Length: 470
Image (tube, rainbow, N blue to C red):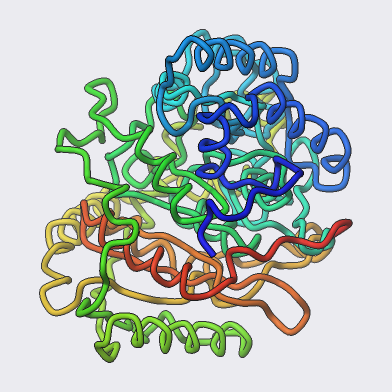
């Protein structure tokens, strides 16, 4: 069944693609769709805590404006009238952007981040700002000034992080799609934890200006959605060169939508077993191995073992994180507003030897220079998104987890600047989602999306939804 076949009576069950079709055909209005999401937020978000700020009146006014344009025969594209949520580290003019920290409670930007402007130009309606791990520096979204975000599949579990509110809201039908950011895992890991799709494109393809940084050399912005097609539709609205963004790349935009439905027969899949399969939860291993079988059947080529070179860019990342926060942590009054765990992680960047940072930056450049060459013998790489399912919230709060295992399978693709997507591929025995990660060469988004879409359509994992009550 395709995304467009199912047109449920509850419009919040529609994918972006299906809702966009109904909006364009005037079977549904943006005001009706937006109000349906606002009603769901009011009813269900006290349980999930995915939103920090809900922009109800503004969203309805914007939706009415989009409806008026539709009646007048003007449409801005497939996102016209679609309600979307924004992670709360993405600047919004006149609306607080807190990064889920007490440090930034009163921070109200004067201008929108370029990606917000691009969404507005594409006709999207912003529902509000989404909860997250404080300053995007963690993988649980349990550490937030506004309280932990909860996973719609089991509210005692984290939704992953740092874009936990974005993932929980999409999975819980509290927005049609959401933007998150990804420095080491933060779009793909929460997508895997919440049973949805998360896309991180080539580094620099979408502007990160106007987004509270974690590590500029690794930061990405990307969509969390309920289908691969939706991820392509949202990402297509974001791409474009931004001369005000020091890491933006001036390249022709990849044909993101052209990858959907493209034949995958003959494509070669590489399986970098080490370290990506090391120490997997048995249910994750079984689900991913089953997905690899499906992909082999779709491509007609047996997936092959593959070695992905390893590089260490953590010293550079830690140095960039500390550099952004240095002035704030030097002020005792501001310093005490950080969560202690976040503060300690920031202070890990103090006193790093210049030689280590320079060597780390050199290794990252070498990784990116060689990224295209990795794909001489394969077309995409397939791995588990994460080694295990979502963590327990009580445990994450009482005993802060070692998060290196959470990001082990995702951070190499931030270092290498490669496009990569997480799609659902099954569930653990106790009903927690599992993610499959598909990665390609820089600017190879169309191939990544083609493989992900083919797998998604050959299975039904993406059509599963969390139980009411979580």
